[in-house]
Image (cartoon, rainbow, N blue to C red; front, side, top):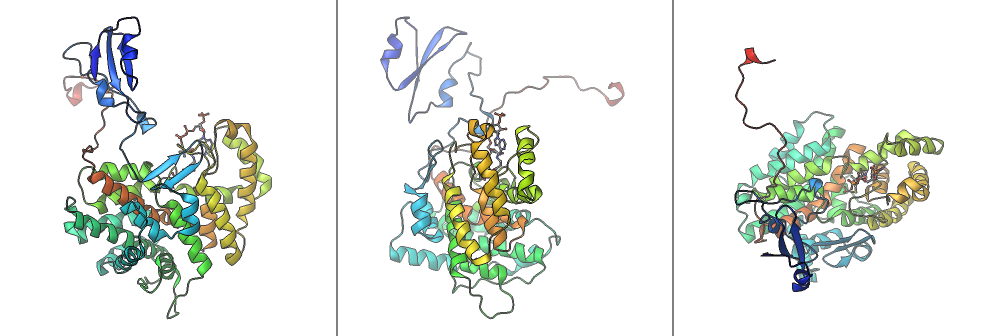
Length: 443
Ligand code: CMC
């Protein structure tokens, strides 16, 4: 950044088209700040000072609503136009033609795999699906009614204690191994959590099955010698996994990057991601949508409910998004997947309520003016319920596929020379330099 004096005749503005000219009215000084990729660097403002001992200007952006925290080549999102692409491939094409494991490879490696690469990747993931026997024991230590997402935070974080070399994050081979392990073991941890709350025995992975089929087997296998997943349900689950795999710098990915920036092992960083995803404003929204639809109960109650939302007494869960100001493209695909699943399981009676809520919202001035559209979580819960899952498991179903996105983002972050430990600044608003007061003298 260069510091210039204003001339008053526009000479500064003409100096360089890809710059921002800033006049600090406190001092009258003018600065020229470079603009790259439509972005100015917050550090360029630090030189704007009122005196030599002034700290310099900071930017204030609670909730990062207008701050780019990284450069990333993984996921492209155009919220105004409802566009989502992984490594440049539109989500619609991936959902139609790809598989979750292929998409996970794409996110991690940057390109779609060739046949030998995909075969090797599938082999590697499949042969790392087992977890240490001790994992079963500590999952068994949770209360019978523990939330499976809380169990997942604990169990994925605990994997770091089984793979102690995982903190060697500067070794590319080591990173590759932990990447495989995380994607492979997440369904096993999730299924163990489910079996625990159901009071059922844990089932080991079946390595003859594909990724979603193996997950269904670990969840639902009972006395049969071999569980045979319905291929339509298996495909629907695979599509859901593709849709949830990554979503650029969302709350949980930001958590993984921020925690990972301390150079902790990836299991601990991903545990932070699971914890962030647990919240009702993020991955917990699918669970909250189902609870909301059940509370509405029948179509006659919808107008009162919507009025409550407009009066600010509640939120319409599964609606709205920080980035999408248009229909979430994932919601469109999920709506279609609902039909495929309901063909096997029978229609979820809550679908009618959901469709009616959506119809009213898309015509109502409150939602239209705020550009509130259904997001990925609005319909996914209906599918999970049709698959026989308890509501507590819904956010877990989000965490399984998001693991490939988290790890792809973590890999990008640890190799990015510009990244350092994430450490924001603050505007201090408290008291300063007071003398300690003995307890007897306090009012
Ligand atoms: N129901 C009612 N009003 C809403 C909703 C909603 N779901 N979402 C936003 N608004 C209103 C909000 O009250 C505000 O109105 P006003 O300008 O009058 O104050 C306006 O719309 C802007 O909302 P905001 O809270 O400033 O938007 P945000 O970007 O901070 O929040 C959000 C985004 C996703 C947290 C929010 O839309 C929300 O709480 N939605 C419901 C929870 C949900 O479905 N979350 C899943 C998100 S998608 C998957 C994921 O990321 O996990």
